[in-house]
Length: 61
Image: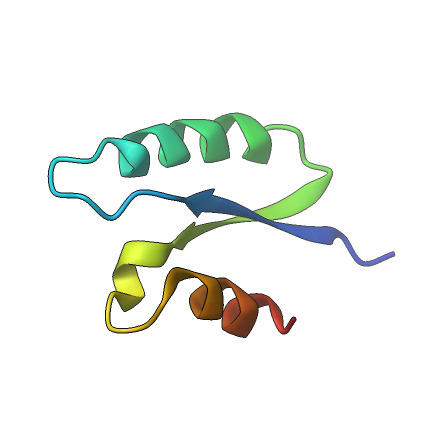
């Protein structure tokens, strides 16, 4: 059976944000479960577009 894919969304785009560190910490714990595939989704990585469209594009909504 194919594992579920779950995105861990980094919701901050401000300078000095700590969401990448927190997201990696959460992903490390989640990966240890072994029951799904977890991926970091960083909305700041596509700063030229709106936040909502980034998430919709990534997940095909």
